[in-house]
Length: 140
Image (tube, rainbow, N blue to C red; front, side, top):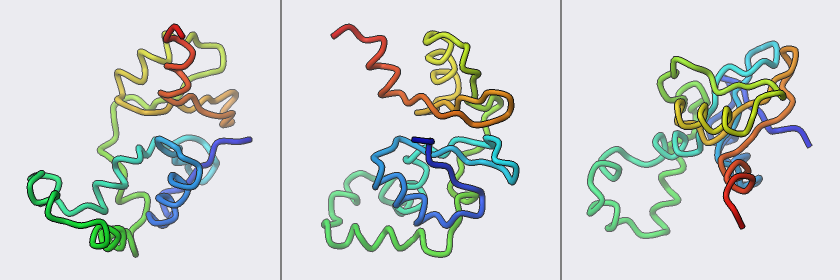
């Protein structure tokens, strides 16, 4: 199954639904040619949905009940993926299929990305998630 992608123009609420429905740590944002442009971590979608005063003061966040928390997701209405993106890192989390697990781990750590796009010949082949990487390297 191909990795779900979004564009800069994708509605933020749609990106949130994709993240939730597929239980993903993030999405790959592609350009008009389908090439990876950025990685959108799920936490960045939350940053747009949760008011900054609740992010800055945990005691205020404790005062919000679950019913009211649903209202915050409405903050995503009318917003796009472009508005959710964090400041662009100097390095895009993209690798070729030939890299090692350690190279992927180093890239994730360097870019603070929960996933890395796998691209071969300019075509998106899939992604490696932090969870998938840890499953592979942590002894059972």
